[in-house]
Image 1: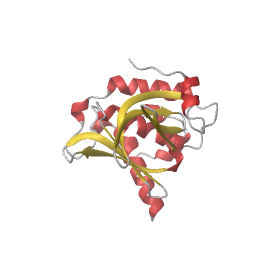
Image 2 (image 1 turned 45 degrees about the vertical axis):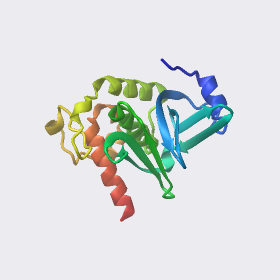
Image 3 (image 1 turned 180 degrees about the vertical axis):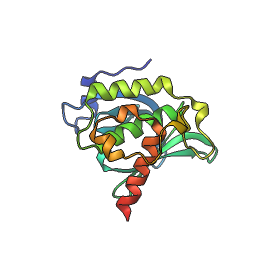
Image 4 (image 1 turned 90 degrees about the horizontal axis):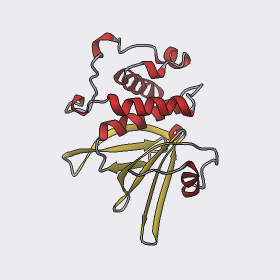
Length: 192
């Protein structure tokens, strides 16, 4: 099992604020000019990637607040193991080789959503939510179009007021499919 301490995380990503706290990391590959295998690091405010091969190093840091969309993708056009981030400036970043992808997608999505809140959750709350999700996601629940159907799908209205829920800081109590649908609506409203 790979573990990294906050001090090591802050040394690798020295351009981030020194008080930035790491929540979780995953092995993956970033497709830049070539597919670079390394690790994705999810902190409170940033999604980061780092690879080191012999003396060649590459790193990337993206603030969640700069992200416009997070989508499930397929690598090699058939493998459902990738995630694409699109920044507000339209730059795109493609990460692949996630196993299992759904757990990682949900962690990225929840942390991105948190960055959009007026009163974001703190490190302890985020860590608890991300780790609870890691054990509660059924990978077989992802359908062919990539939407999530939770076991309580019909018990919650999809048009729940996200701004009311966010203001009440009850993000952690909503099923993921409600959050995902609401954020998509908020983003489409921003574009119009």
